[in-house]
Length: 169
Image (cartoon, rainbow, N blue to C red; front, side, top):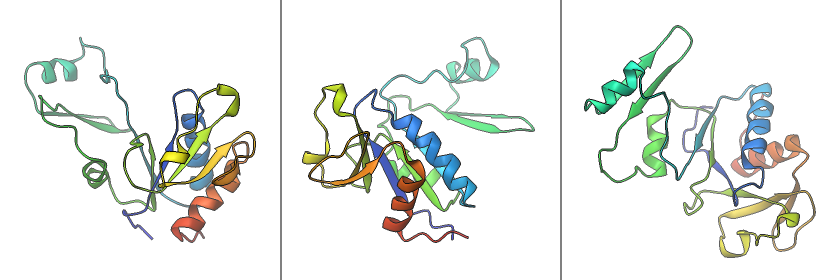
């Protein structure tokens, strides 16, 4: 399969449960035999290691990128040094190919999305203003978009795979 153009997003306001749903979807899709990348956007300054660690000291000394490697994983930390934040497409291009890339955040990008929304939050949903939001995952039915039960991540995974026409083994 390995179609890196298959990008699907989870969007919504803070505190709605986007990360919780993303984690459930990752486990569900992995169980189905898919390789899935994940991208999480943050508006905060990312602190990925304590400032006294060698890799942080290398970045502070001026390294553009620092790669930290072990027998278990590796990470590349890239300093922007005042450059513009890369677009979602540029971020996806840095990843290894996968069957699907799930994106949390990047709410203004036009990729297909599900909004995670809870009526009890008292906050207005985003879907009335964003045509890229194809469905709403909520703990109660909604009107105006396709409703997915937030408590049924397997069905939400089915929906994403159906929308993207991804076949599983």
